[in-house]
Length: 268
Ligand SMILES: [Mn+2]
Image (cartoon, rainbow, N blue to C red):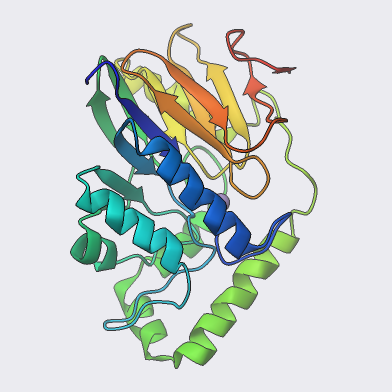
């Protein structure tokens, strides 16, 4: 990695739903962030749930998001590598990003050496113990026959149903997220367990949890980083080849949860 270059990670934009700001306002904010980081970005990792619901038909994609898609295309045309990991809200990304923009889609976590460090990167849904209901649902959603059948529904109906469903799943968790402690944070347990199999990993990078977390794992050196979200936090991670930091875009009040004294603002 060049010393002046940075690698960026972000997830959980959930475009398509309004939060503190509307989806369109947040999309413009994300485009500002992409423009801001484009001066020194060596690569950008988008780690899932960029869209609150996305489904690609053979010849048709969902309306909207033209600013974000245009910006991603522009960055790719300028030679910035971009990698996309599907989340539980946008697992029906198929060939469009790859064919249109040269952005590869990853459906499973990957392990990758970046600069001097080893990264384990994934959205994080369905990892760790428990969550059997979701793991079962994910199997159905990932089933090609079910996807083929869904594509046969008229989009006015199919997309409408899906948007209703994804809005409903969020209404189940209205309270603001908080750090649940070492035993109850599934992705933290997963990362600690995975260290037994892959002790070389320096950084476990996940989204999904919607909480910016920087946690030093059981070997006292590797870290679990959760990227947070872009509904209220506007959090992202930046890596300079040696060090990794969580930061916030256009948000002065960003809080980082976890146990890393170098970053900690909210002791748990
Ligand atoms: Mn999410």
